[in-house]
Image 1: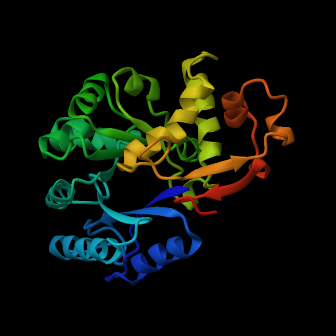
Image 2: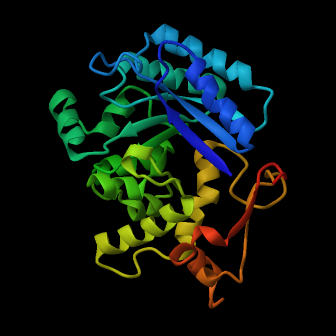
Length: 294
């Protein structure tokens, strides 16, 4: 029902961004554009923007979709390597002004932790905290290579985690310590990452991948249950994006999927959450409703 597109191929303008949002609108899905702020001079020219231009365009795009209840824009300083300290701070300030989440890739690969320690003498989350950009609006994408002290800091600041299990396995990045985040009360939601680092975009696939990855990492078949994984893919996703989605209750949007409970992949009907996470295939999805419309 809802996607967050961490989009960065701006090509020195807004036409590409508008095309993504227009396609989502025509399809009828709820779309958050995490508009990437990228000024690393080693990146392709189509990614890069000066800080003032990036902020101005992001604000302009947000204004353009403000009247559409299915579309929204949130700032996304790409990463510690893709965005300068000034760009990260500018994105965080914009999120503060809007009261919206602010998305940043962090500690996806082990070398990124090593680089942070070498360059700043602290881990990546600690550096983000020193910049004043780690707070209750921060969404950390991946956040694999953080030590216990940094995980405590993430929890203390109220930041959230976008966990992309299939992508992490696809690239051999490592395993996000989901259980340690959850134990500290950190909101963890599920993402797919990009097409070139996953090849699939299914929240149901990610629920299953999240369960299996935590089990094999802990060498414990009880490391994560299906009910927790289902929550990561639904209610926690809504909390991650600051949207009233992911749960069916008063005050929330009428966004939901309709499943065929007689589909072979959901039989025998022993425990629905376990069946959905462990065995359901896409053919069991009969319909998808967004804002009450199929």
